[in-house]
Image (tube, rainbow, N blue to C red; front, side, top):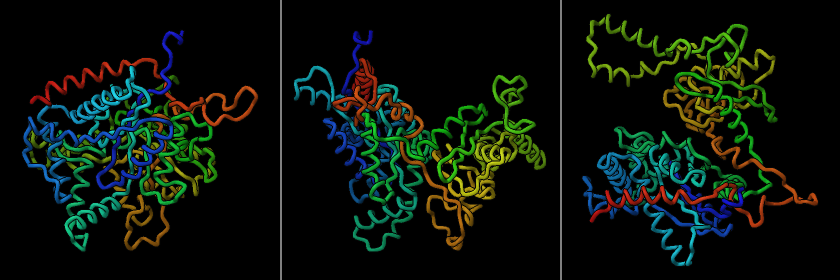
Length: 496
């Protein structure tokens, strides 16, 4: 029956880039273009800000856009992006703008090639800053869309921006621009307001994370992109790295949790790559371990109808209000909800994923000294001290956790992403490093293979010849959805 709806061998591909400000994205983009072209794809560069002049025709910037100096360009463009989101009451508006450009470029290419159907075209769209933008692109383009996040250490990015700003203005000392760079990094990561940039909220939802700081030639950004592209086109010689396999298992462990706040998973591996234990954030039960589904008795948080940590914090807060005879107004409630006091983690019944993995190993008599722990979320300060005490040597994390006080409380024993540890720099430390590679989101899809040999047992380099993307696309329905979005954007935004 599949012959009635044949697979499209060379479907369009859509790559959305997410990178914190100051990260070097040029190397990764150049490598992506080169590798896609090696598979006979035409690559189209889409820049969201290229449409700003078209927006300006109908929506005057509250703060005039500046091209020079560079620091002013960043600031005014960020402000105008925020203005557009607010004006249209839609935080996905810049993704719509990118789709408008995609539709225009596709039309040009198809007319030039006298093509009836779009094929062998890849669009590299830069850059996205809001969850709503990525959600729209995924909902329209489905499995043909890939979010590529480009990682770079925060201190590297601040230094890179400072040097660029100073050079742009003919200044010798980049430190004079450091405060501006710091503020831009903070703004980009989690800007105040409902329409601001939120890179920190979407970075870890990537399909691929590239480490732009890796300097070893065999693992640098270009090599990472080359590996991903070959994998996407069905290479039979690529298997998961330790990072990718470890994070996949950690993510799988997370899915067994039904904690009321979030799902977190951890996986501990020996130095030689053997699995020691898995853990998830869940309520413990007597006898060891935590509750499982379909085992009869169940006292997890959902069965009690309340998050025990939140309940206890509210009780303490009420006590403080009574002591000072304070009347609770809506304004005070909002301020208190955003106060650090309400970030406390200590009152919950749930055992965190990292601690669950450590205690499971201990209960089974398995040593974790010098092991590696993979965690879907950056460990909190409570888990960190147990990681240190257990003798774990390295932690690889995927999602950041701003509430964690690790960098402040355990600077003597933990090296977080190579940051300056001051007087403790010579102390032995547990290395906390960011994950890079194919994320759990597309792990199965990209790594699954059937046979890797032909009918006479010889190794085949790719799953098909010629090599085609590892996608099963049988229709072009996304074009109708895209057209609907673009038409709406054209009518509502780009009116003369």
